[in-house]
Image 1: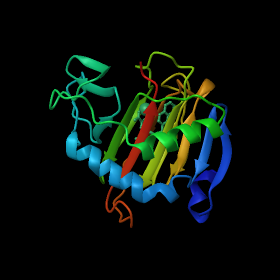
Image 2: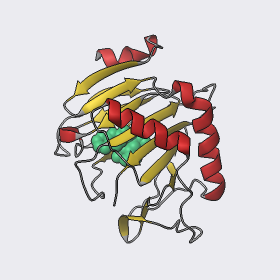
Image 3: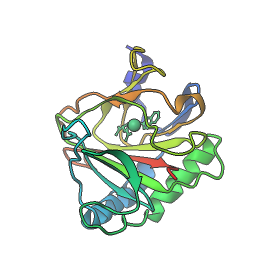
Amino acid sequence: MTPDLFSGLNDQPTMEAFDEGVVVLRRHAVKHQQALMRDIEQVARQAPFRHMKTPGGHQMSAAMTCCGPLGWVTDETGYRYQPQDPLSGLPWPAMPESFVSLACKSAREAGFPGFDPDACLINRYQPGAKMGLHQDKDEKDFAWPIVSVSLGLPIVFQFGGLKRSDRPARILLEHGDVVVWGGPARLRYHGVLTLKAGEHPVTGSARYNLTFRKAG
Ligand code: MD3
Ligand code: FE
């Protein structure tokens, strides 16, 4: 087991370079947890969480919604970013200020000043949900990082290589962890293992993950 799988023993905010292009800001979102949860709920009132269908015809086990000028969607025709929520035909909800400020501050601390995300994908995992190994490559410019924020129940994250067949490393992502994925990490395969049942004081039986992207 790697030392990272024991990070639950440490409650203090820390900063570490886990791998080339990966800056882990452990627990940095904890002090914003109330605002972030309030704003997730606010977004979900306008654009409800839904289980999208992959082009292969499978339903995703994580429920998703989006905010910001662009949202990521998948359906039988493929993956793409678009300005409207396909459920309502309306623009995605605005990106809440609590989201924007955390994403920009985290990117700046990790060496990406000027990060200006135009898309935030919100994933909600309930026990049994997972996300298989994939690359995030629907964005226009891979020079910008992706900033991820984990809230609630812990999950085992898999961090692979540039080929799907590269054996992934495992990292535990816990409540409040912010990770900036840039440079050579940007196109690496990644995913999460099945969420185990549990109870978290802030999110109940769920895990939420926010990913901030510059898509367009
Ligand atoms: C490494 N989400 O939404 S967050 C996704 O926990 C996604 O919901 C996972 O993968 C989740 O696309 C993982 C960590 C993460 C996000 C994006 C990355 C790691 C990444 C992009 C490139 C490399
Ligand atoms: Fe991803």
